[in-house]
Amino acid sequence: MADTSDIRKGFKMLIDGVPYVVVDHQFVKPGKGQAFVRTRIKNMMTGAVIDRTFKSGEKLEKADTEERTMQYLYPEGDARVFMDTQSYEQLSLTDEQLGDNVHYLLDGTEVSVMLFQGRPIGVTPPTFVELEVTETEPGFKGDTSSNTTKPATLETGLQVNVPLFVNVGDKLKIDTRTGQYVERVKG
Image (cartoon, rainbow, N blue to C red; front, side, top):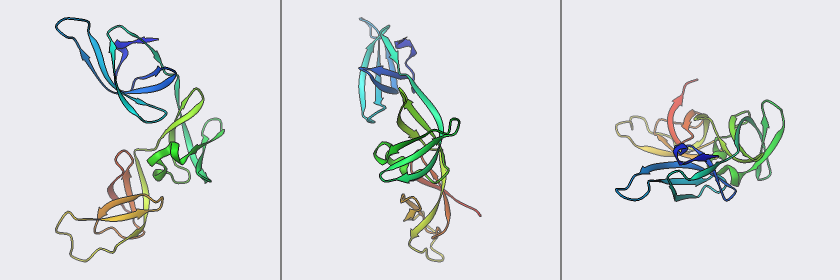
């Protein structure tokens, strides 16, 4: 058990048997009355974000979550298969469970899988991934004066805006937190 003094960004708690993670929090001490903690919490199963207020000293139940490093193996229907790098046990996550993270998975990519009571509930890909451009319009020589971008489709189906000098076959570094182009990778 924990109490409201343990609430911090990233703190995981159970509310009515559902795991939540604290996205934001604020301690409030009004002039009169009891102090409280105002929080924004995210449902780790559905991704829904809600506001919740806890009275100071209120008891909270910590969520029994575990993170494991797993390797992405292959797609199987509308699911993706991962293998635990320690025990070699395999598990599947649907594309719906993965959300946008499905666009950052290449064979052999190591990810962090969040488990709640032994069931996978989410995946955190590496912060940066290198993906190849499979489709984009050609750039024009000398068209480098402005900060203009064009759309490009990458090997996983992800669409990003890239500078005009990027061509088909280029490898790009993508930030998985924002889904945006970072730089072109040499070599």
